[in-house]
Image (cartoon, rainbow, N blue to C red):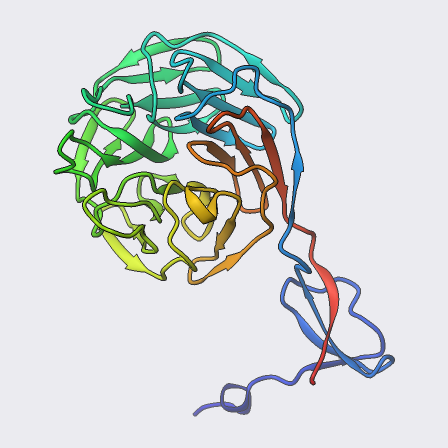
Length: 320
């Protein structure tokens, strides 16, 4: 038999003041102020200026966290590697192979970068970084550019454009620490899209464009290790976005055209707008997570910006 609570729900707690340690999303009635109150994030976060890259370049890649980031390759310095410590960028060991518009995943001290070169012939090179040195690893099955990645150094995923004629523009490959495996492609063929995720069995892809289509993409797809599934569309078409975060807490940063300074948050079911960047990021890179992200580089810029989400705060709920 159903209980009263199951049928009618629970009552809003009546408190003479505010609870001492409310939970995120908790709602109550403050009898002292005669108002309903909720504990939640109070704004869309804020972007602040970070340290400028040593070598400004576009078509770069990025991975890591806001205070321990790695960026590789790009134009005009396709072998250059820089690390960010939360304040400054430092140029470190160059890569053995040139990379532009490649894909990357992992951390600052344990990363994989593969593919690249923004125009044919595309490379299928794959390299591993241990925080000091680079090592060539087994090549991808299909060379590609305009790639984006998710996961770790031993469990990663890359997807994007994989042929000069764009016949495999939705191609996806996973990495197990030794070899690349071609897996099911995107449902919506796209390149220059955002991809993020903690592993190669839980990723998110969004935005982008297909040169054979007249408009950019709003579609979002979720990856479960076997298939891509269409989920909630983005608020607007976002070609050239860069993604960071996880499958259920993802951030889309920048892109071409009107979205160059825009940032969007995906919470596992819906998209919402966050604060905009001061820099119009295009052909850039990003890393971090949904509460502490980093955006850097791009067309004619070495600018870096840091995003921080606000701490939850108690807010009044108006009824009018």
